[in-house]
Image 1 (cartoon, one colour):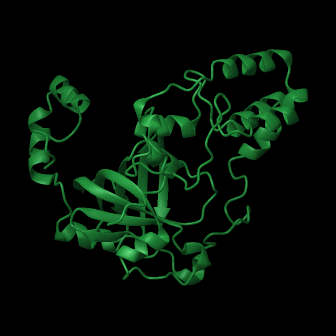
Image 2: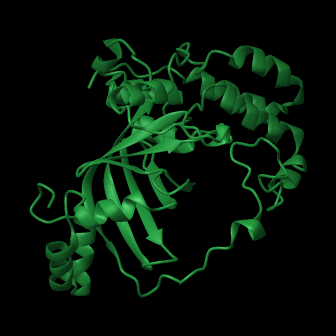
Image 3: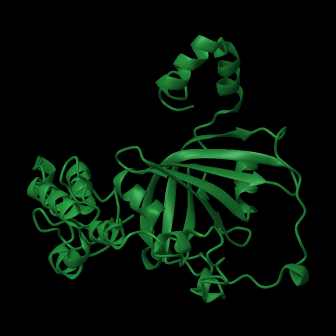
Length: 311
C-alpha cells in the first residue's frame, strides 16, 4: 500500500462519500492495490506488446498516448521498478516533455488476446539516455530493427499497481504476420504513418496566413505562456530547479529574457509582414510582459532534462 492511510486522491474519496461507495472502494484498495509488482504482475508485464500512457505537464494539462514493441519491450527491473524504451517518433516529445515538468505518470497494460485482463501502474518517472541505461543494465538486448532501437528509456518507480477488471475488455485475435504485412518501425514516410487520415493538415492549410504565423511564432518563442510570460524551458527550470530527478533534453537552449528559446526575433521578422495590426499588437503586449519570475532554484545550475546521476 502507499504510505498514505488510503490509496487514491482526496477527490475520489470525496466522490465515494457522496455516492456511498466508500466501503466498496476500501475493499478494492485492501484486496487489489499494491505498492509493488508481485510475481504474477511481473510475468504479465514481461509478455505485453503494448500499453497506454498518461502524463500531465506542470499545469495539469494532460496527454494520453500508446506505446508498443515486441514482447518484453517493457522491462521489469525489480519488484518496484520498470522501464520502457522511447523509439524514434514524430519529434514532438509530448510525453517526455510532460515528464520533464511533472514526473508522475500512469500506465495501463491490457491483454486483449489471452487473459483479457488489465494492469494499472502509477508511479514516478525519470528519463535516461540509452547508453547510460546499458551501463547499469548490461543485459538489455540490442533490437535488430533500427527503427525499434531505444533512443531513450523511461524508468518508473512503482507507487500503485492494481487490476483492471475483465468485464468490459473485448476479446481480440491477432492477425497472422503474413496477412498484416511488415510494420514500418521508425519510418518518416507520411503515407506509411497514416498520412492525413483525419484531414488535419488539409484543414490547417486553409487557415488564414496570420493564424499560421501566430502558431509558428509561439513555437519559436519556446511555448510562451501568456499568463506568466515564461517559456516552457524557463518554467521547467523554475519549478524544478534543475533537479536531475526531473528531466528533459540535453543542452537545452537557455532562453533570453522575454523571448523564450531566443530565436523569436528572426522568426518574428520573417512573419511580421503577414501579421495584421491587431495580432501584432497582441504579440507586443505579451512580449512586454515576458519577464520571467525569479526563484531561488533559478540560481542552481541547469543540468539539462536527462538524468545523469550515477546509480
